[in-house]
Length: 574
Image (cartoon, rainbow, N blue to C red; front, side, top):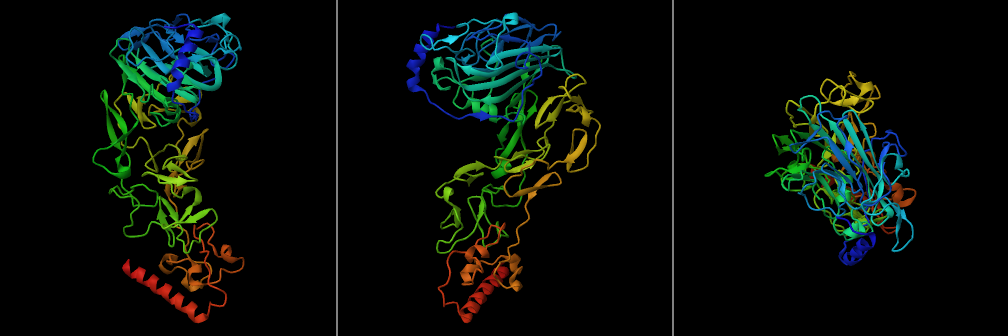
């Protein structure tokens, strides 16, 4: 139900006092399907500038001959609504998303919220140019500019609906949402009316309109995303809908390991296994081994283990899955004299001596910005902020990051005779006509680059543009790892021999003397302490130095002997 703009504005003013605001903006890895014609490239059909409007009835039967079997009803027409959804039983002007299930309005909603594609006019109550509540135009009268518009394109077996950089009520364009809904006729091992659905989000800057209790695009009743049968019983809702943070979640998460992309299959009228490919926790397992991925089993899911135990390393993750993080077993986690502090190999310090930008703590030298910062398991402090083990990671081609490691997302995932694993989730096998432009269906039922069809590449490489390229190309491995032969593997330990000591000491116990060179009272050499630092190894000389005139040879030899004794003792303990 709609109301005049001035009434909605009054409602928003009343509700603003309880709004919870957020200024977070989000962006995603996915891209939109473009090149479809029209002013913005998203089709020639669109809604004119409006608020709460809907299209006239859109006949999809020429493009989907069997219709769309949606929760047991074959749909042959639909309505495109300004407020981030399509419906099958009539237009929907409702701007504040009602919680699913909703009566009499079967819908598919990538982002049901109060979209407003009008522009500020500065009139009475800050009015807007363009039609008012519930009004919309399409076809020849479509006058949308190159952005802040709603477009669609229909072709054989596919319908693409795009909300391009749309603003929120009232006429606000300081924040934008850009998202797309793609319906594709299913092929292969499917029945009449089966289809696939894809939500794509590339810009997620707001989640609430002013008349839904929001202010500045946040607070109040945020957006809702998912499917509703319109029978007050059956629905599928993406987790986090109608809650703060839903916009960021849609852009920064996925059920197919492509942030901003969400894929669903509708078979026999039912949205199949919508949570396939989502992170899950395996009961009874600890540490990184407890992280799993959901896999379709019939109409439900099961949690599949993807991470197995490996030797512990300094990353604040329980790598060996024994319930303890960064513990030392048979060998140290860091090359001496470094020690493991909060997931990072950190130089020890004496009398406050640390490198520039670091502070000496009881645990060792810590970056100034991370002093006093406590991160939960699986995170470490970087420039004062706790970051996850997979933050900033770009795994080699064909792999995904879980628990601080890169691996094949489809390992251990089994699909039925009609499906194939793609990015960790079971999707319908492709056919010769179901792939996007520039792609073809390979023998395994996956859409691949047409130029790569039939190309076989050796281990550690993959096909791109018809040629085999290194799978490490463009990869950014998790902390402490480097990419080799298409795999992220632990970095080689640095040479820990000390600069400033006699060469005969290099290599003793792997070069791991227990004290920095300055602790022995030795001259750091020309340039002071900085000249005595091992560049690239993470080792630094201590800032403390013996007073001038006190470095007599007997004392120096005694200290060296003490250091060697400690090293030999340490070797004996091993």
